[in-house]
Amino acid sequence: MNSSLAGFDFFSEEHLRNPHPGYELARNESPVYRIPGQDAIWVFGYDEVLEALMNPKVFSSKNREALLGNAIYDPKCQEIFERGWPQVDTLLTNDPPSHTRFKKLVNRAFTRERVDGMEEYLLEVIDNLIDSFIDSGNCELVQDFAIPLPCNVIAAQLGVPQEDVAMVKEWSDAFIALIGSELTPDQKAEQAEMVVKFQHYMMARLDERRSHPKEDMLTDLLNARVDDERPLDDKELLSVSQQILVAGNTTTTHMITGGVLTLIENPDQLKKIRERPDLITNMVEELLRMQTPTQAMWRRATEDTELGGVEIPKDSLLMLAFTSANRDQKHFDNPHSFNVERDFTSAHVAFSRGVHTCIGMMLSRKELVCAFRRIVERLENMRLDSSKPAPQYIPSLIFRGLETLNIKFEKRGMA
Image 1 (cartoon, one colour):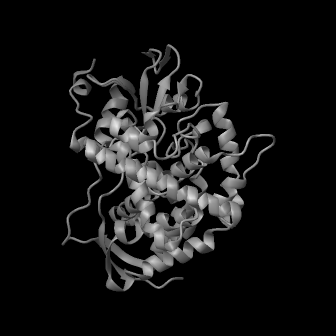
Image 2: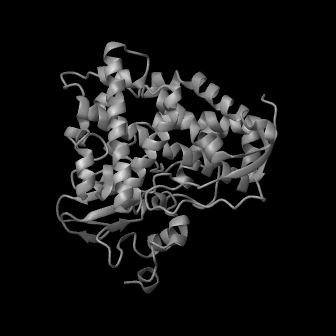
Image 3: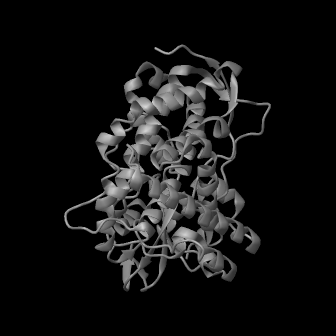
């Protein structure tokens, strides 16, 4: 065992806020590594992460804790959850062949035609948000823009009226807290209550759609039919809605704020974007590679196997470090360098790969392209507000995003 890696603290706040030095050390010394004192085997290398993602039979996604964390074992939380509907394995915590049914049905709601048809609506939401702060010459981008954009979009698609949009953020935060934070028993119970409130609220919206269908994703999910597959039942609809809520909310927020900070730190690349707006789509892929808002995801070995030359006993828990894989120097030249013209001969894994490729990636990409198009068109001379605290990333193993991003800018006329 290499002493430098053995002595590295992967759970220190310093590493959680900036994992890249530690991940680079791990890739160089041991791309597949069991951290001393931990049950999980970590997978840091691009090749090894991709191999696990592409073999769901051996590296299973079934993990009861992935949706509600260890609250599922807490007696008080169990009592609370019983007032709602049971969690079922649909997408994130499922494997083929069962997973295939859900993927086919949910894909009916995430068609390219639907997403492309949302562009005008997205630009309207984005412009309204920018209008709310552009004349002041400054903003706190997380609260003023990056949170409300995906919240409004997901709310509209899940049938949540405008007056209830704030609850979308509360629900999303509750699910994320349960799976990614250290909570006291009382805090777990509080978040469990939010989960049950979400379920009852969404069930009411589903009942509304049954009697009054609308042109939204919730109606599409309710009416999805593929071949002779059984349609989604209530428990399954709630599970899918929950996953869409979290996946389409927090990750987009983190991508926007991390992306703007990256542009501020790389004015030469921003200049290229201003000169060639057609590069924005490729820039979004580069930001996804560099920011990777979902840092890692769990898998469990279904049999004795090996990965990267390391023996993996049956039932081992693996943490696939997407953030690390996306900066693997074997696949990405100058991996820590932001290059809006990067040739993606090696595709990033920000949306995972294989059967568990994110179902909402088309919508996420569309939101990000539209957001950055308007930010570049409407904000000039973006810079950090030196009178406010410097931006810091949230200390988390699972999600990567900024706590706050205070910026200044000048108003720029749109082309």
